[in-house]
Amino acid sequence: MAGLQVVWSIMSMVTLTPIFVSLFAIVFMASIGKSFGVRRLYVNLLVRIFEFGRQNIESVRLQQYANITRSDPEEEETLAKGDVGTESQENIDGTTVKANGNIPNGGSQHRLANGGDSSSHIVNGGNTVISRAESLILSPDVIDDTRSKSTDPHEEGGMREEGDGEDDETNSDGSEGDHEAMGFKLSNCLDYVKSGMEAIIEDDVTSRFLAEELKNWNLLTRTNRHYEFITWRLTGIWMIGFLIRYFILMPMRVLICFIGVVYCVIGFAIVGIIPTYRLRRTMNDMVFKHTFRMITRSISGLVRFHNPEYKPKNCGFCVANHTTPIDIAILSTDCIYSLIGQRHGGFLGVLQRALARASPHIWFERAEVKDRLFVAKRLKEHVSDPINPPILIFPEGTCINNTSVMQFKKGSFEVGGVIYPVAIKYDPRFGDAFWNSSRYSMMQYLFLMMTSWAIVCDVWYLPPMYREEGESAIDFANRVKSVIAKQGGLVDLVWDGQLKRMKPKKEWKEKQQEKFSKLLKGE
Image (cartoon, rainbow, N blue to C red; front, side, top):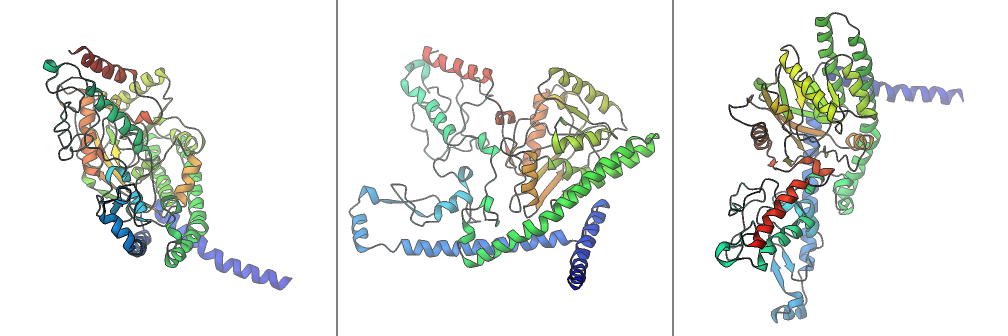
């Protein structure tokens, strides 16, 4: 018995000592903002593995396609006779699709759904049922009855397809070309019906609150189409990756995150009782960066910052697109911010209360009007003091799935002062950073982050922007939004992100009802 205890103690020392040494090294290097380069090598290795998996999946698909396309002489004779039930046609990607909707190769539908072919273009977010040819007519900013400008390639829905609507009697906004002369026709309703059916299948708003489509499978079962059993090679790689993610990476990540949170709570509590302002500010900046660097390392975060000369400075607003609460940790590894946002409970609430003990942050209740007035007052007071750090704001007000930028709230653009735009773009191959708060709680989301391969993103600091003379706050917000969308390669949308939680505004419906009533009256 004593011999077994000795063996166990020796084995524990041999296995646990390297783990604790590695953990200490990770935490220490994170606190000083340095790295050994292991994460970059790890990410590059993952890219090679994903590419190997893509090649295996494509080879299996080609084999399946070759086997299925070897039709019998009877089937070929039937096709020659032009049987409607088996007539085939060419799909948008060159694959053969039967008229009754059957896809010849068993896996080609999956390839279109999740984009297994890296060279293929995913149309309409992977949905092959309908490809929208014109912009939505039920847009919140469409008020007039003039001819639609949907042929502009910069409109929401993109360019019109060749020949689409050229011979129709109605325009894309539901009005007729010769409306005044010809009067109302029943066909004027067809554009509304078409837009309604398109919205039921897949609209421009709800698709922004779903996980981003991938071109290649990243060996995660949450993003695959049962590819883990397509070949024995992929099965082996997937099983090894599962063991590494759940039994090696996740325990270490949880421990690092726990150390970061404990450091945050204790560190800011100590900073809050320091009487001297200058020393308190210096200590706050150090604890602030150390905390978020450790939290970022706990998810194997690899952040690439661009244009550091435009880094936000004191007495201003840092405005960025919003994908996840981790955006705060990502940006705070490189700069000190004052934070503003909705008051939360649970894990986020612990961090919010700890941060508020040492530096000026603004937390509010979204539903209370009094809080809105208080926030506006606090914002003006904050930016008027040149020694205060910049305020980090996400004007969308909710998380979007890293494919687009939605409507910016005008509040922070009315206060005045300099705006520092920042564009954030995550690489979805290594893990989906988007937080669908309607589906996952914060703890569930953190579990998904801890069991992903890594969180890799690019951050672009953009030149500071100022509100021009005579420019409204809404126009200024839209101008900043367009700059962020262009730099991050994101789609610029006019819709309010709060449609994720609530119904469209009543005035939007009334505008469309008024517009349609004019058609009925023949005005």
